[in-house]
Image 1 (cartoon, rainbow over the protein chains, first blue to last red):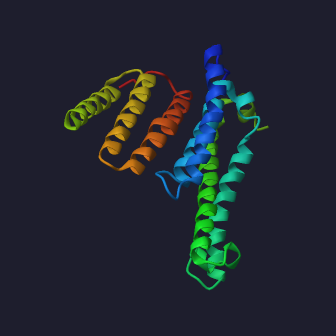
Image 2: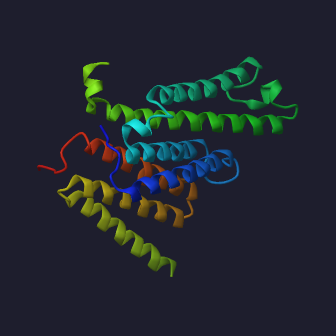
Image 3: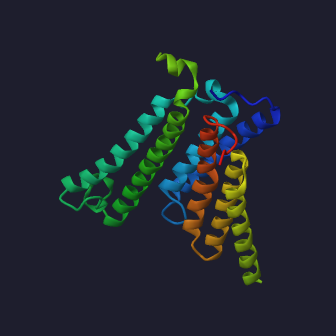
Length: 151
Length: 81
């Protein structure tokens, strides 16, 4: 079990830095078309901010908002959204992940590809963030007494 | 000027890698490994591969360091070999 840090400097620094890292993560995910970055890097940044909170504030406080179940759900939902958008393009008689074949994304192919890429970036980011957080939780799975007791 | 900077970065990369292997304390080894990743990210960025450097900085210096420290929490702090 990870205990909360005893140093107030660590606590305040972690609480202050985590929202800034999350804003940076959203920026990297959404501007993935134009600049270096994208879904994977932004998702890793998002996971890093959540893991920073978990490492600094301890298990009880750090896992309050994003629980292990929620993280697993995020990774599954992101992968499902990615594959589902590709399958929707297949259903619209296009190739896999050919966003121009999805009619509700936009009339022009360029606009449809723009929004399709944005949706896929967000899906990849959510999937990567959830997967990394649940990997961290699985690494620490045996370390609490409640885990060993099977509750 | 740029060549000097790259040579300095490469020397620092080798020092960080060697010290990460040489340290007996596993916490110090994990810390120097993140330093290695960050210097490698700077080298990638200086070679013009900004996307690769960004990925290396985020994954290598961020999440892998956290995962190594979380793994250290489950084992002992010292290497026996």
